[in-house]
Length: 408
Image (cartoon, rainbow, N blue to C red):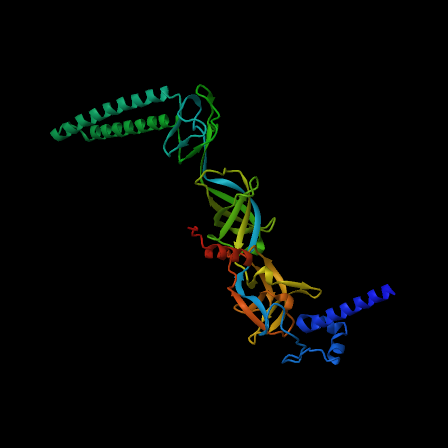
């Protein structure tokens, strides 16, 4: 008998709970209606009122005292989706020169060390040039002699005692002496290795006293204040990217380091062998943290389509898929199916029947049903890129509004 009494008490409690649920929580009506319990309750005279649209109403909504379901809503924004092109490329210096002697000889001196910064025009190394210096000295003597003879002939010409042939021979000898001097000075300069551009010296391969041959690399000079990054893109991007477009690069060895740059140049034609277009980007390296030859991951930011943007808190899921609760002009809830186009840290971009400025529900969704009257307690502005999600914005607002005046 005891178990019969206990079962009866449980049944009574369940019935009371269902009745209370139906009367005081209107959001339960669709569930009860699908279970076939709502119509019998109304037939028994329970206070289940009808709304203006003929749907089951009931007592006041949970957490409110009339005037519709109280919610926090947000305006729908419009944000351009990020359309990024990824590639792998290799960096090279803005200017890179291989320092090699023009002639063979013995390396007499090197005025720089590995890793030095040099200005354009600096003498990097000097080959043995004693023979060439002697040639310059002899050429200077011959030119002085030719100049003296030309001066004597000029004085004779003024007095009328010099013939035209003597004058021509003196001028010819003087011009020949000048050319011989220029040639000797040129050969002397060829014994010097001069920096053609400003930059950093790499590892110096030779020491003074070593015999070098023409074309033997002594060191490499790199101007790496700006790095050029070359990479290939598929031919479908022809016309979508061009000089001046923004890009982001990060070394494969340090993916957390992201550097901004721009596209410097685009090749004039597509490579027929692999159907790719060669692109050259440039990045600032004034802090000298990067080196030519490093491999980089490149991300080119392309113009994207504009999508409705909402806070992630507004998105709901059920067996039918993802949706949001929109608020129409009559302050009634409307379920809108969505497809997520792109996720961001601060917003979700949607493919949906939503217009910028329209309102979607962020908080209070558990009490909503199609056509339910809505009262907006708080309206959050539309999400903008970099603004952060709702929780972050509220935390920042709370910190800004907090009174930090110390108690006295």
